[in-house]
Length: 124
Image 1: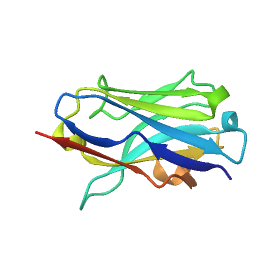
Image 2 (image 1 turned 90 degrees about the vertical axis):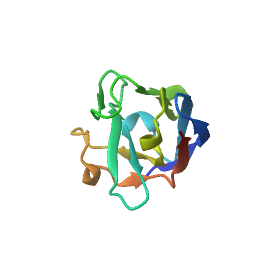
Image 3 (image 1 turned 180 degrees about the vertical axis):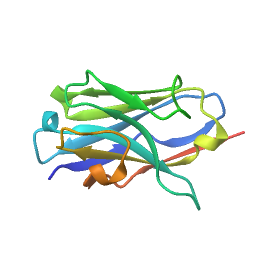
Image 4 (image 1 turned 60 degrees about the vertical axis):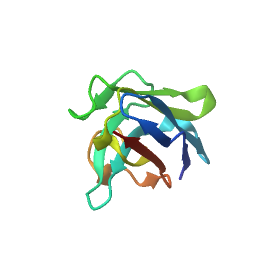
């Protein structure tokens, strides 16, 4: 098992940017593909982005493609989500997740390691 802790959220204006971080511990970080999901009040959990173990491959939801960038620095045991051009509809709790499976992507049940989340609030 790997433990995950998110940080970097906050209250921002529409059009602003943030960099969210996900610090991992407990197991070798490079063994896990990483992903970001988000959940707004009254809505279901939504896939945002994912990245392979090496960082070579990435995947994004259509709603964030071109605005958000997922990355990782394995030497620091940390994954990141750079969020640009934020919109009010991006307001949610953002969660990072990890899986040791070779088949990674947008399916939530693929991931059995989750952080506690960090709040992103975008005002208009």
